[in-house]
Image (cartoon, rainbow, N blue to C red):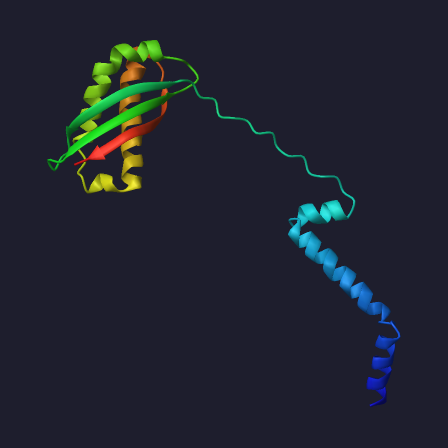
Length: 161
């Protein structure tokens, strides 16, 4: 009971143990290091320099070509109406693609008619369709211009009935 009285006396006299302060400071520092991101926080707290941030470099892309709207039947007899924009690469081949629009429309109708309503309900299927269209469009564009120029497809309208 004498030890309990000593502890109570130390606390009332304002004399917490020195080891307790060191532990609290160490715990606070560890929490700060963990909150700051581990290695980065430790580097900053230990006096090291901040790591250099990599500069954002936007991807090189060209203009967007408005492909227009296509309405056709799917493989199972359902109707689809799709409007697309084509993301071109750094070379602006808009003038070269325009005369190919009838060929590209035919390719899109052929590709779309190979899909069913149920297949195109999923997002993954729409992405697969876009990849298929890009591949097939680029075949025709490469023959005409010597370059694979379409890098992406944006659906601006996608209605199935």
